[in-house]
Amino acid sequence: MNQTRVTLLIVLVLAAVTFTMCCKQTRSAADDKTKSVKTGIVGRVEVWEGNFMPMVDPERRNNQIKPGAGRRVRVHEPLKMNGGLAEAMRAEVPTPVIAEVMADSAGRFSVAVPPGTYSIFVEENGGWYANVWNELGIQGAVTVEEGKLTEILIKITTKATF
Image (tube, rainbow, N blue to C red; front, side):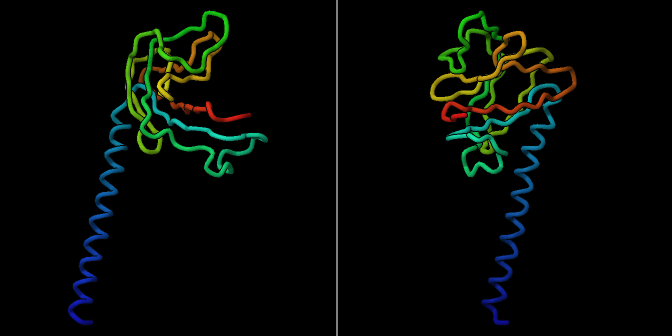
């Protein structure tokens, strides 16, 4: 091999090693953040768009389900519905904010909160969205137990039809 090819081979090997180390560090930093949360909520935000009839596996939906990347997720004191129509989208949530976190590029988030029941909302089009209620009428209800991580999936379905 001539000198140019040897130099090019060395540069390519060094670039591959550097890239691999970089990726491993990025993954470990994300893993460390999740591991640091011992009691709280871990989850993912998804944005559903388009016609979902007939209902089939989400994996077969060809880009109709996208990660909710960069969205703010807020954990509030429980917001109980007081009768009347349920509002999935709110301009403001009237209960105090307990914690706030940003979803990463894959829509994942983790937030440490003490044990208890909370309402969780995600920012959507300048408002706060939660389209689920528990049996007590708490909007966006999530319950956290001592020493456990509660896993949730938040589906933003404002642009979906069923």
